[in-house]
Length: 128
Image (cartoon, rainbow, N blue to C red):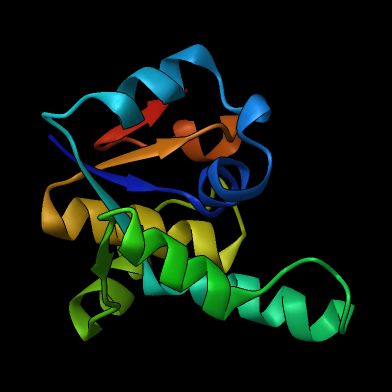
């Protein structure tokens, strides 16, 4: 199964793995699953990094390098993904989460999230 991890899960896996649920770890450790990260998540981390400043502990470049080294596949943002956001109901206003949901719908992949609001959307979403 192809799995896109939301930004929180990516950060937790990289920095605070104890925050991951057993269910999340099971999905992530299953060798039959292909793990992906979105360029949108790196954009979100980069914006938070810029806002927090040096010494914040967030480093989008390092996160990307570690994800690629750990065999995560990068999912770029396409115009199809951006346009698909218009079809989503207004359950959640976070633009990054909405883009991740749209990516999963367009690509037919499953989004892993710990966010209750994100999990309310119809589509290929697993709350872990």
